[in-house]
Length: 488
Image (cartoon, one colour):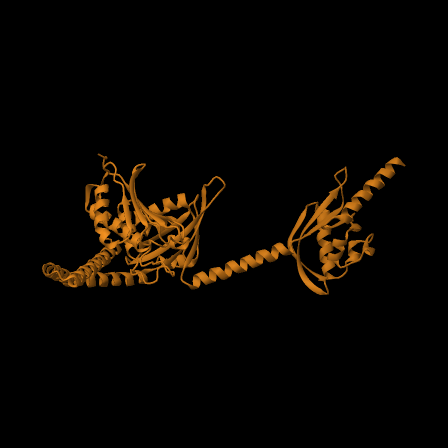
């Protein structure tokens, strides 16, 4: 009696567990698949009440669907293999409506101590929310893919370990290849113009470190024609910060580059043609200024001095446009020489003082720091930074210039107490023609090429230029130059 009581108690506990389980569960006993226990969730799936308990599954679930279901479970009973069903569609009547739901099923044969199959445990878990979420994500990805392809942009996924690439057909088209052709990473890399390969390799190495991949380069199609591309990507790392994948886009910017080249040619031609009459105008203005000083005509003298300042401003602007066109064409040359950076800063300050009435330009010269660089171009960078500091800070404020060694580099900074920069402006301030636009800058002249030229000059010196700022609290622009000579 005691064993029977224990068996009854154990059976009751199992039945209670099935009844109270949060998932759909049923135990089907014997080869006839008698429904020995079934909780409310499995009954809902079957569309039945608890009066089917004790009946065979075939009698409880008549009809074509029930017959197919019964045959499948009989096969599981016969072969003893676990059967899994994933994201199975089930129509259920809930909240007054028939709705489609998704379930994962497990049909697990149950064996006794002698390894004989005595029944089947059926477990079903609803996965409707997961399926709908995945479908929405897939739909979104498909719409995004179609939108990207409609713009002519290709997207790709590079395996950083195996160096295999999965790409949209558009990528092959951009490289002048058959869109049906499966491209490889080495194949695409080999099509980069030989002169641009070092730059692309450097961009790739930087991407591994920083996570950001960006470059514009020329590619050579199989027919020998040259085209321009712009590539951007982001690196995905594992927990050990090892690069796993790079996701990115590439698109054909050849037409834009051609337009830029034509524009640069026009700017260079126009600027060159303006230099001669402007030089003559400056010479005549200086002659008039000499004669005016002999007459003691204050108004005439001041007018000519202001005219000369405007001529100098126009001259610097023209030189800037000429340098910009040379940079775009890759023709800007550096004339490197050994010079003391402190002496150059002093000269730049002396040239800037006439344009900075009411500003305090401060530089404390220390021991000489000699560097091998293009003195004129570095002076141009300094002049641009000081000019910007004057333009965007109030009269009476201080502009501090410093020069010091930072490891193996020379660091030169220009710090002001001006309006500062928003974060979005800091990220774009060195782009060509970019200007800060807010109520504080209305009425300030400029084309937005000074900082662009400065950045390109520093880049040609293999240095770095950056800004640290907070809106309303001034800005500090600085650049680093690698030392190529000993200090004295």
